[in-house]
Amino acid sequence: MSRKVAFYTLGCKLNYSETSTIGRQFNKAGFNTVDFTDTPDVYLINTCSVTENADKKCRKVVKEALKYSPNAYILIVGCYAQLKPKEISEIPGVDMVLGAAEKFQIIDYLTDLTKNPKALVYNQPIAEATQFNASYSYGDRTRTFLKVQDGCDYSCTFCTIPLARGASRSDTVESVVKQAEEIAASGVKEIVLTGVNIGDFGIRNGNREDKFFDLVKALDNVEGIERIRISSIEPNLLSNEIIEFVAQSKRFVPHFHIPLQSGSNKILSLMRRRYKRELYVERVAKIKEVMPDCCIGVDVIVGFPGETREDFIDTYDFLKGLDISYLHVFTYSERENTVAAEMPGSVPGSQRADRSKMLHILSEKKRRAFYESQLGKQSQVLFEADQKDGLMHGFTPNYVKVQAKYDPVLVNELKWIKLESISPAGDVEISEATEVLVH
Image (tube, rainbow, N blue to C red; front, side):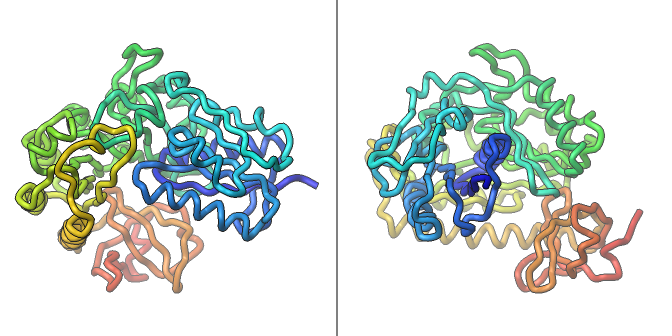
């Protein structure tokens, strides 16, 4: 009887692409992938450590896993596993912890599934994690997350990612194109490019050999893929040539997610970000000049050490005045071994929560205003396999979430539709009469 494995992923799209790749290694080794609740023999939990909450989530997932399969062998990988291997090894039920350099050789470490009284830890210093391991997610028929870059050479004062993933390194353009062609052959219609700092693509063995723009141009010629989406790119790395290319591209969609983190130049300096807010204004203006309907998402952190009420209002007003579409709001949490954790001017938790709430409300207003600006227009929607209350969803190229009556024939299909109204849930609604309107 073959052994069963279940996977649980915390954190970012990059983690999802890596979990999927590790999952294929398990399948080749004779494991069957099953649901979390289907009494697996092995659980693999891929962790995040961007916030303190992610650490707590890891503990909770382990506890839940043991409820469903008390004798299961529990493996922990990911950023938290690299940063806090000893801490994780002491969580009751954990059997093995693998660091960043070890996780892609997981089958080599899994020689037997005997549970030991003490967890096994294989965790080299992060400086040893120099190899780029290609990954992409598989199984969601609609879209695939394709990893093109890993690690980061930046030194933002709040961030543990360089400690968890090491220096910036990339795949080759040729290899990424080959993977994109494999993905296209599987029937997937959309690729989301992912990495830690994908705008820094092109570094191999410590040397810059390509630019992200080189990759963008090459991927635009991959036949069979309808859409390519850039997951997130730093404003200082989002060049005008990239913006202009996307505007006339065959496959890259008009959607950028651009981390800001703060609208206050004082706080940006304390964070050691590599730009000022004036550059961000230029990037947004350029995008809207050549792609008026482009969706722009923004990452922002509230409650950073030294952020006064005035600094926050400065950020709020800055964001309010920008022609952006939505926000991802993060409440600052202290992380060990970061410069920010030792900075003066800690913001009380209640103030962090209040500021987060204000920005979440602003985000909803921005999203609704963006959706309203799209009503009456025709667009192509890629429908997904989800079904809830007789409804299904899909996204336009510029990331408007569209709701339609469920029809299995529409799954993974691109259909021209007219954006008609906004539902109580905040999605754009379309009627049956227009959902298959073809140009």
